[in-house]
Length: 139
Image 1 (cartoon, rainbow, N blue to C red):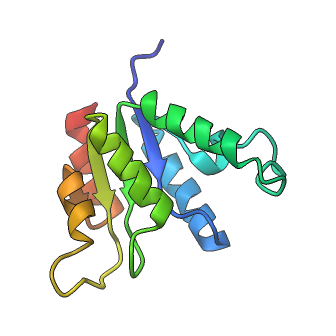
Image 2 (image 1 turned 135 degrees about the vertical axis):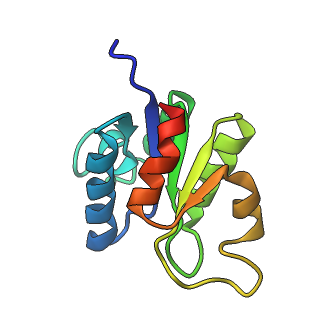
């Protein structure tokens, strides 16, 4: 084993832009960590999602969080993606550190993200550079 810690990379994955950003972020994180990316690691084949094999994808994602040392969660958008919110809550309940990444400049009237999300994360980065600085303490 190479001793690298493993990150579960949570985020929305339903548009071409989201998928591409997740891949870009994974490549950045691979410089110091192993990375579980659901869009790649939870699907056996490219058409598994089209076959609606939801139970298999769910189990692989749960195992992905279980097997990871920490979670990095993309929090961009008007509201946090519902799957990402679940992954944050699950990781928090398991005692795993969760680092939020919000590059979106929009803010809620009473905070940066939903209160429940904000209280479940250990740190919040506003860009990739800040994320990498925060992650240094988790190596």
